[in-house]
Length: 110
Length: 110
DNA sequence: CATATTAATCGTAAAATTACGATTAATATG
DNA sequence: CATATTAATCGTAATTTTACGATTAATATG
Image 1 (cartoon, rainbow over the protein chains, first blue to last red):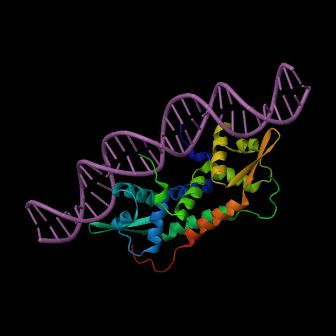
Image 2: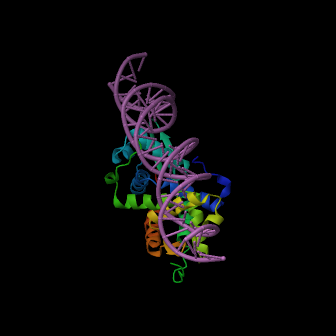
């Protein structure tokens, strides 16, 4: 089947899964690294830095955009991509909250 | 094709993608929530808390184990799962490092 | 206006993911 | 020892992901 029923999970679970999914491919992490490093973020420049075709990079950009982590501004014939700070912060908080939820010393079992 | 060449990406990119992938399905986030909340973590109890079949949950557990985030101890006929603190900390640091890499004020473009 | 450039989208193929029921292996329990 | 319980694995199907080349739409440039 391969389908997942959205309503079976909590908002937190769905939200975290959404952000994690955006980060679940090295190419997308690489794209984000480029955007975090540079101020210039023209799509073509990103394509040049990745070992992937233009169309594939475009697809990855689309997914990052769908997750809200980046946004793109059309500038003439090019598109300037950059981190969406607001959503980025949300992702950081959501993922951080989960990852921090380890009450360290007493790991009774195992 | 659908293949991804591992050597085209940095260790950091591959590592983050690995952890993010583990968290990229709400069922797996839900499993981790169970393990973070409870001390008892018998596989059957996890299955009872999820809207999925035993075999599907077993597959998700396998993936979390493959990412190193959890480990399972066989106890007679049951298996006790729990967070692997060491790898969990690594995941937290890796993901945290990326998410924190936003030098906030000067987002020149877009 | 013809041509180049840029990036999205389309069509397609291969692979991976997700899910389930059935089976299996291992340990308990009567 | 026969039977029950637990959880992994197998087989399978639907769906999604990943990737590419080709095409398209939009803007720029000669």
